[in-house]
Figure 1: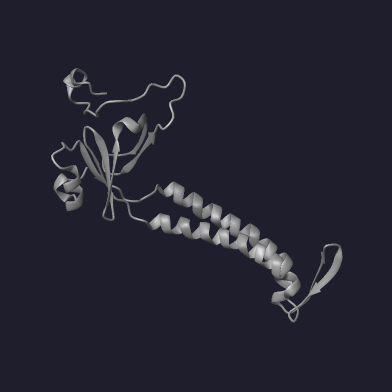
Figure 2: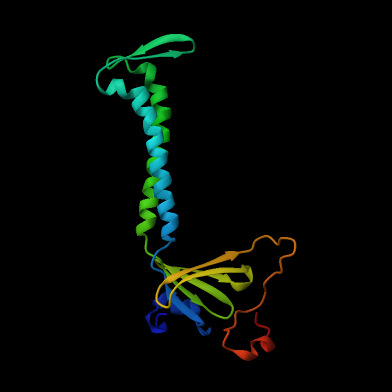
Length: 188
């Protein structure tokens, strides 16, 4: 856990006089697993659509003609006559562009730095690049996942916008586990 004194001034101002239960600095904006999935999916998408580029437009790149049927009419396109393949090339190019965008988003998210997270008894406060976001603990479902060790790890919390049948709504302030009279103060 980091020292509370290392927090940015804007974050300290947003916290005010509230008691800090914890404060951490995230290494990444997203888990590496999510970024790697996006990179893999973007690579697959680009490679799959690249097959269509090579199959349909490949001969044009080496100066040969492409023969295909358009509306039941045999059509020939070549380096001197690209008009018949313009629409198919734009459609295929659009799908290749989607794959490249997915790949770029995955790569950029893998290197995007995380922000600060501070927990107070009433809310979770996030700070990243000058923006402060506050989320009341009441909005969380109570389902959380913690992986890692004492120095490094991942924390995942779920928000509960919908109350499912049988799910109890979590309300009230967050209280530390080491505080025995927490139940007397109405803490969860």
